[in-house]
Length: 332
Image (cartoon, rainbow, N blue to C red):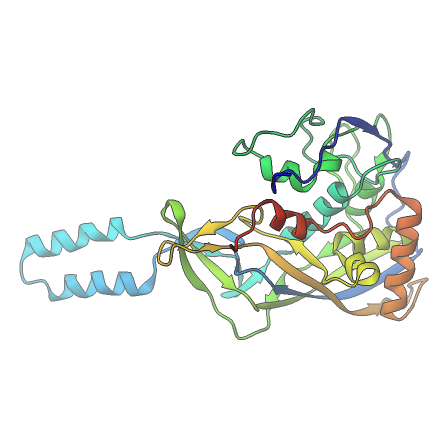
């Protein structure tokens, strides 16, 4: 079988778990706590853009030096025109001038994993960006062909919700879409760099230059959870890939950031490099005084994930990173 053909699913209908009314955001129940989270870059690089561009200092210094040394007006004009042609580099997200992973990026990755790794009789979510169930796998090279093969089983599902909020919407909030907007009961803070790694400017195919964080970079931050029942907390841990370690003796790897589905090529070496694979570790929990549940972290993980698997159709030991690497390995 061709390496890119990871499954041969067919269209089907999935049952979506819904709640007619949203959970009271004030009523005290379940778990209210602060989770400490560590994210380590496992792939060659991680890139999460700030939306801004910069010019590498070394290149700018050379041009400015040439202008300063110029002795004729035409030389000044020539070197001045070179400033416009300097390569612009996509800047990595930062907080206070230091690299960071935005909480919104981690939240999006968690939400996507819950949506896409669930499949079957009782899924906790509809698709946030739904263009309809696939009828067949797109041809290789067509937009979205990697995504379709990584998440093959779920993207063939028709998920219809007529009334109420999905379980995931009730946990993480929803802004309208025909329903009254509700806030999240999970708050993702930015994760700041705690290792001694620094940016690398990497020039990729198509002359795209990015400020990327290399393998081994470590970020830490917090996730606040408010009034979550045990199965809801289990869904969050599932979105953080903690089931891989608990049930499968595998590293809890996730896909995060730009270029996470495809290999890129470095212009200077011609080698293919991998982006967007991270390991997520929940390293601590601190409960609010009013939290109704207070368990040691390992027991909290074990019990909450167990309830999530009992209540929802989640794929145990599904590894999207392994499948992504099967579809398009960045190493020969």
